[in-house]
Length: 450
Ligand SMILES: *Cc1c(COP(=O)(O)O)cnc(C)c1O
Image (cartoon, rainbow, N blue to C red):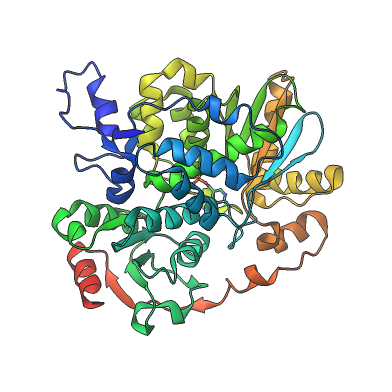
C-alpha cells in the first residue's frame, strides 16, 4: 500500500484552481517512519487494496494473531515478508478482541483486554512491534503527545525497547502510571516531559518537531499518535475479526456503533470497509460535544471549524474540540460525499442517557459497559428505533468497566473490583523535565538527554 498526503487529496481534486501537488507516493514503511508528509497534512492511502480474498473465507476459529499476520503481510507487500508479519502479530498481541452476541439486534465487541484496559492498546502495541521489525538493527525515537490513559498505554508498550527512545509530551496536569525505573536517566528509554499547555499545544509541538526535518532526521523521529498510519491501520483488524465471528450468525444490515473523539476508530472502520468488509454503516457516537455532527452530515470544510465551547462530561476522552484525524475524515468526504452521508450516522448522547445505557446493559444482558461503550450502546438503541432498522449493530466497548467503577456503581448499584494490572496504573508520577510549549525548548530538552 502506498501513501500520499491529505493535502493532495483535498486540494488536487478541488475545483478551486489550486495546482496539483507534485509529490510522489511513499511506501507504508516510509509513512510509518516519517509519520507526517513534508508538504503538510496527514498520510492517507493512495488507494486501498481489496483484501476480501484474505479474510472473507477465514473461519470462525481464526485467531486475532493469524488474521493480523495475514493482513499485515498484504498491507506491507514487498516490505515485510510473511514471517516478519507473523512475528509482529505475535509480539504485539498477547490479547484478543472479544465478541459477544447479546441478541438478534446487538453484539458487543470488547476491546479492553490489553495491558492498560483501553482499545488504544491494539494500535499502540502493533506500532511498537512493527517499529522493532522495520528498524532491524537501527534505532529511532518515538514522540507522542498524550494524557491520562493514552500516555500510560504508550509508555507501557514502548518501555524497555532497547532501540526505541520514547518521548512523552504530557500536558500540564497530573501524570499517572509511569514507572520511574524505565526513565532514560535511570538507564531506561522513556523521556516524559511536561509541557506548559494543554493537549492541543502538545500536539502542535509534536507536529513542529517532525517538520523540523534536520532535527527529526538526526534522531529518526516518528510519532505514536494516531496521526501515524502504523497505529491507525491495525485498528481496522478488529473490525474484520468481528465480522468473521459474526457472519454466520446475523442476517440483514450490519452496522457498527463507535464512541468517537478523535475519530481514529471511525476512520479505521472506514478502511476496513474499503478493504472489502461487507457493512452497511457506522454510527459516530458522540457525547454532548457533538459539533462535528454537522461536518459528518455534510462533510463541508466550513463546518470543520468548531465554535462551541467544550462541556465536561463523564466520558472525557470524547471531549475533543479539534480532532487530530479530521483531515483524513475530510478526504473520505472529498472523494465520495454521497456515500459518506449514507454510511456514517452521527448521534449525540448526554450523560443521563449514558448512565441509563449502563443500567440497561446490566439489567437486560448482564454485562458491564464502561461509559464510552455505553455512549455507543445508547446511540445504537436510538438508531435501531429511529431508522426502522432491521439488522444487527455491533457496539464497540473501548475501556475496561473497572476503570469506571464509580459510574458503574452509580448506574447499577454493583461494585466492581479493579484487576491488579489496572490498579497499578493509578499512582502519581513525575516527569523528567518541564518546559514551555516551544520547539527550541523541546529540542534542547531532548538533546540534553544524550
Ligand atoms: C480514545 C478513546 C475513545 C475515542 O477514540 P477515537 O479514535 O479518538 O475516536 C473512545 N473510548 C476510549 C475509552 C478512548 O480511550
